[in-house]
Image (cartoon, rainbow, N blue to C red):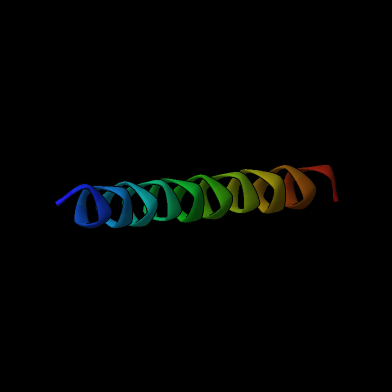
Length: 36
């Protein structure tokens, strides 16, 4: 049970990280585009 819970948490954090990375990369790209 504990093992399953840890796995679930890991997947959740990975998902959040990926979303943040995508968000920040979009933000960065839009900022770069505005500068030019």
